Picture 1: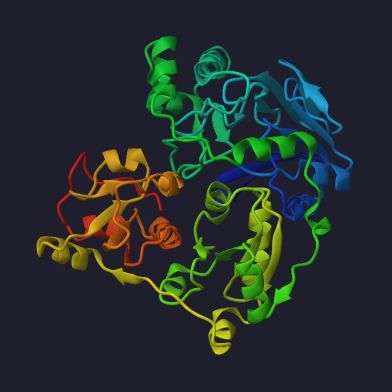
Picture 2: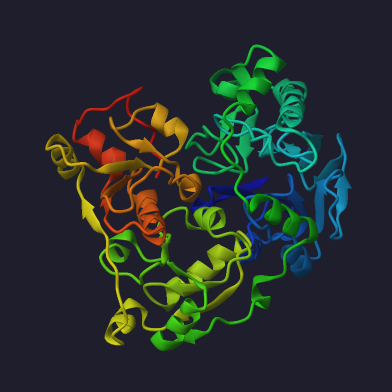
Length: 466
């Protein structure tokens, strides 16, 4: 058997190729599918099957294009309501090819149509070798239970408990676990940075699986649920019908500074994708910053939304194309053009520029000790905050920041801090758009603060999330 995991860092998304005797299966493909076609060709495999473990809500899948280009059959849970040509999977069904058997388990809970695929490699043994768990079971976590428009989180969590305990945890301890997401995904809260594990390790180490009862599990999963990103249900709907091929998207227009300014003035959102080190000193006033260097697509989906009309600022044309593909991965396609020549062309044309300051953790500490009346805002998630934070900071998670500015003084200096500096630079642009005039980004974030051995309030050092 041939097996490969593809990991897309910007979406914390894992997809898979399984091959045997000339046949390949692709599981949970990302939207740009060329990598699967190239890898299958390199291994002399023909893609005959595509498996969707569920209708993904955090990204747009490439299953439709991949099926169109290969003639493969798409397998998806029977309760998905999929409108593209597919095989509706039911519990216990199998796909056999070469020396491999894939046995499907219906595992509702994260979504009602969720399925997992138990992999048996007959070259190794007649016992199961691995299970592809989609968003049912992650490494260190389980799928969030709030993605149904019809069922409550409590109902889904109860279904998820049954799927885990009556299906996945009946597998032998040595069976490998390969999920569809890793740390940083918005589909869970405490995912590990590990990309695989075993059933036995998860049985003992996964916090959600240690719940003493179904009632405790439901309470654990549904208390303090992070807000569901607005684009999740839209992406699931796109995946239910099948997304068009990326090649079908129209070419992007290269706009002069004057054309760019005119469209921006008409209400089209400017998205600056450059690194924070280049955005902060000089940027178009009122632009939204999300750097390509981090989880760009996820944050764009959460903060921009699928229906937004965009103008792009990038370092170069290659950055424009990368941004476009990564935006399309979450269903954002209404891009009206990009700034030809970048910020340098904008400046040469005499157009206005704005800037935000940046300080080190040590400088922040000195200013706080000196009694400066800073509004220090921590834009990390609640779990990160609980593990340790700077005394006097205000917790305002990035995904809810724009709705959570009540009581803040737009005339006073705001210092913004996250874990490593990526999210705080995004937040700096949101504060500027909200009318704040004195904004400082804390370089290196909480990680830099703890590295400098500065005082921490709360549970200790936070996990290393950007």
